[in-house]
Image (cartoon, rainbow, N blue to C red):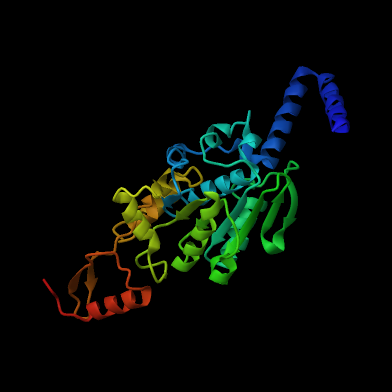
Length: 327
């Protein structure tokens, strides 16, 4: 520690010997380098994300972040997961303290799971782009001595404060989600309900939290047998205190150009999935008009959430398409 302090003093002395204009240039370069290596300390959520963060409180067990494609939900999920591992004290006197100080992060060490539906997305998007190496932004895991060890083959980060962050693929099966006590489970996109149930159980003995980030296309596109996210959402709307849901719009993301936003709007205009793809609104397949083989339409109305299973749901739609026009 003394050697590091001495080197720092020597560096400052050298900078002070430079002309003032050069001093400023050197300082700017040092700050930029620090931002690249410690991006999480400088993370600045945009307004919609800031508003959503206000709803992740100590009273919240499950915080659902519903967002359109590329709306920033996964970025916010990665920020929160790594912040949970680092602990609040890491951010004091840093720009991102404003967004961390009110989050219900317990003192480290913390055990964090990052659960992704498929292995490829875990490896290429969550692990490589968001956590370890960066792409649209620098990685959230800092390069400042906070990490003791990376085990990329096992998708694990061991922090010096004792925290452990582990990436897990839901398609590995529920047996891989047992026998652990987890302080935060971040589930990115909707997995099967048995995986969610195991994750929920892992948080019970430590007052752990669950973070969900997903594009809400539960009813027809996720392929899950039981649309448990839809059920949680309905429960929260009915006043259930266990879960809170917030929405992010693709059209508010600063990472998407105005031209791309126009293309996205044009692509989904009038499509049944428009509200979910652009605005993160839960897709509701309970009231459809479905084309049948005669070229006319059969009116379909579900009185409750279609929890009959995805395969049965598909078969029902096929049979309804064969019906004659109903009105």
